[in-house]
Length: 321
Image (tube, rainbow, N blue to C red):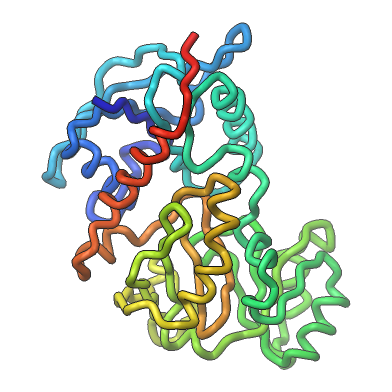
């Protein structure tokens, strides 16, 4: 029986019918895997060895009372067969410290997805620019004058923070925007923090397409997240409506270019965001939309992910102290 560790947000905050991590955990339970639940604050390093105050987790398929946790027990991380790092952003200092501890555990033989060093090094907004030919015109800067010049060039742009999620802090602006200065002052912290400026893509009205990638290969359907009336953001957290659509040639072309780099970096489960023909973000921390796609398509994404985990476990030589 595989012992699966999962580092995630407090269970009390999880949305039972929508959460992708929960979909993965239910699939693991159905395979007979045992689950060990942890939060970031449960990690411990003592005399060079990484442990966690973990709790065995039992899940039930009814929304009112869907989980049961046993008492916390200190275990070495490398005694587990595999660990999923599924803590939601923000990628703050606590998150960075967690990846550093997990990297030590990895050196001791723990198998962790996504790879801790890559979670730390790969910013979801910046990483897309490893593939500039796939991206819309993009500027990353803290300089308001440069951003204003970019706006003049593009005429309509989207501004967003580098550490946001769920559509938080995103602004669509034109040259007529009367609040441009205050928006830039707020987002850049008065020129001290770089932000992303991208050409506005009117194709957003047809959906911000989430393409899930497992072990460098795409799922055959994307979730087109369509903004509600009066909104620019398609994020489900911002009220967008998710509609599954088959992958087209352009989406597959982008996946073919991105996939090998994801595998090289140990990023087993990733979500690409594609608007029109352009790659806008690469989500590596805790990609979502499993539940929405599984409800509307025949593809069992959670099972595919567990298959990939089992395959990767087989390629590791574990070290247990």
